[in-house]
Image (cartoon, rainbow, N blue to C red; front, top):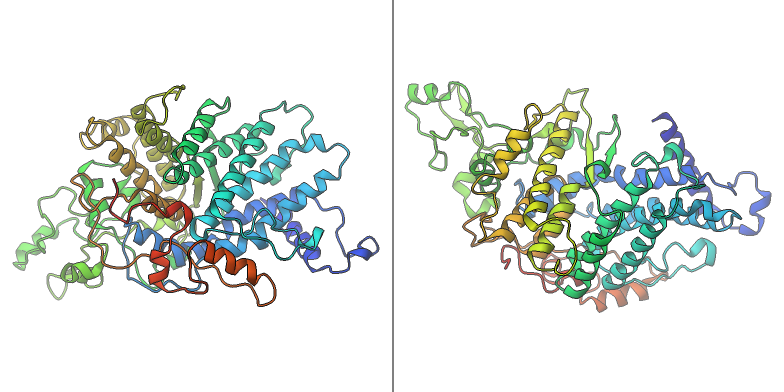
Length: 558
């Protein structure tokens, strides 16, 4: 970690020196300018920034907006703050510049063939975060981005989402091909690659899973293209992410949320997710949520003071200590009042009825805690398995080897999800969901009548497990709900809570400073059908991104 911090500091210094220098004609005579930057330092700086900006994102987006919109949790409704969309600026300021510089420096070297794998890894990192940026913003500079320093191109075009997807798919395919070559003689990043430690096959597996992320977004616009990508990934000799190659940020002192876990308002379980977790005896229930105050001898207190719990609680429920409420508080204001007000039994005894999110699972060192670490699994084996199961179930796997049935991939995804969430909980010193090796609990869950494939609503079961797995990934959870329309309003399996509030389906990109790149920005806004400069919820909730144009409304999946 000490060496990583040094790399990051060097990377920041190089970025600052390169971005502030205006007279490139004297670059070789200025001793304060770094002319031969350390490629390892540049990579560590960009790779670290993929994760470390997310403290702002967790508070202003995931916990307050996206995971509330997806109904994974509920909290007070707040305005869509101007603090959202930090992902956009970080991409162009902290991630892309050094990755471009690495490739520039490699291209100048006589032995550049020895840096083939390092170059490929830089592409994968920039696609990983670029996809996250376009998920909420649509068109963005990419093919002409970061060319000001070398080519004096300061007015890049905004590539539309289809072009971004097509460009990234080709870049990822090329990266997989490069990484599949012989490793003999290849230079590596040393300890600067603190994710995969220069395991090039793992980088290639990540690239393949990112191709699947793009394919599921592509499906409603071009099913044939989605099928082609799915086939490419399944026929790849390296394949997609497995349990050993999950993309996880593991840094002991990293604490992005901390005491802001309750910023502006605490977060609670919704009745939809809580009902399903309890119905299926899901091992992730105690991992995701904390018990309410209905524990111990609470029944004796109720009897003593002749009090009856509200009707939404079944006092005989063996899991009575886990309760969820309305996702949109306006739909049930009487019961929603218990989010803020404890149930009074006597002047000495009051009970909190709703289950909060498991705070230590998200923020291991909040409050007075001084141990536990946050593992952030940004791309997982479970996500990969559920995409594959979804594609097979929809019929996109005909004519080639999918290495398993939809049900087999579904069960692989369930097992990986439960084990990964349990690993996160153990590292956080939070509440685990498994005992021993966990095999019995996982098998029992997979065979639960409400989980096991039944030949009737198999696709919905795949969708709901995919949805439950995204509890830790706000962007992916929200994108899932947009593209599928699940959970469904009318479902008898997993019913979405009633919701009255308009939900923005994208963010607004600010206009560049006047006289810089306004024309290209305006054109991209108009080409997408957006009202330039309009940040109002009516526009953001109705003027959709390209991948989202033909998606169902929230809760109207088919």
